[in-house]
Every structure is written in structure tokens, then in C-alpha cells.
Amino acid sequence: MAWDFQSLFQRHAPGIARSLRRRGLDAEVAADLTQDVFARVIARRPAQDVSDCLSRAYLYRVARNLGINHAKRQALVLSLPLERPEAQRALACAPDGEAIFASREQLRLVAEVLAGLPERQRRAFLLHRIEGLPIARIADQIGLSPTRTWELVRDSYRRIVLRTGGL
Image 1 (cartoon, rainbow, N blue to C red):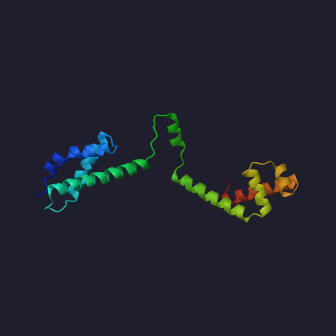
Image 2 (cartoon, rainbow, N blue to C red):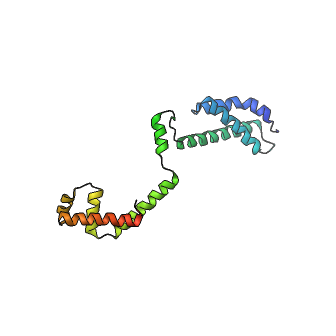
Image 3 (cartoon, rainbow, N blue to C red):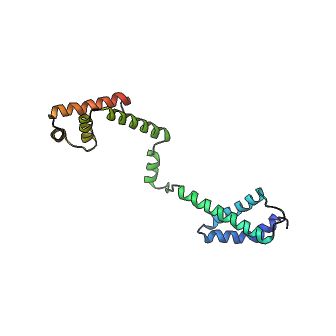
């Protein structure tokens, strides 16, 4: 049987669209994917001696695969209603790729500086900056005076600023 695409479309398109809708797609997407099925079949014609049964099975298999691919793409898409002010603010504040790269590079430099600090100084800095502890409490924990502890923390900040160019 020769592939008569017009008659194939007329016979099978409604069933393919129904099949796609049963898989959870809305009517508009199902119609688009149905057209995509026939576009793919036209682009890659199977052998000319294909029976009607096999052509129907082939069309439905292509439709199923396109439906699966569509569902996978939709799962990856972030959908925010852009009319909402909070969505617009979130998009406006979202960093671009260059900003993300620069931030990661600065973070890497800070990690290098911290790795190069003596243990007591690194601990004092992390307790102050990350844990948010006051200098007096840090001094008690590491066994130094508050003045000396503050000098360690301040020196850590200076090293980070010098290495990163000011963060």
C-alpha cells in the first residue's frame, strides 16, 4: 500500500488527537502534536509496502513518543504567572549567568583564603561570620582575649578583601 498522507490524516488524525487527550494533554496541544506526527512521517517515510494496520500502529507510536517528549519538556519549564508582581520582581532580581559565574569565582577565592588561614584564625572567623557569635564568646571558646580575637577576625576579612578585590 502506498502512503497516501491525505487519506491517512483524514482517517487517523481524530483518533490520534483523542489518544493524546486521554494521556492528559489539552485539545490544542493534542492537535499540534497530531500535526507533528504527520510532519514526522512525511519527513521519514517508512517503506512503501506497509500495510494499513502497520501504518496505523506506526502513527500511534510516533504520537505516543511525541506526547512523552512534550510531557518531559513541560516538566522542565518553570511556569510563573508573569502578571503577578512577585513573579515580575523575582524575574527582575534573578542573576544572569555572568553574575552567577562571578559569584562562584569569588566564593572559590574566599575558600582558598580560608583554607590558608591558621586553624585558630579560621575558626574565629567562621564562628563570627557564619555562626554569628559575638567576639567575647568566640574569645572564650578559642582561649584568647577579645582584642586578639577581633584582630584575627579583622585580619581574615582583610585577606579575603585583598584576594577577591573587595567582594
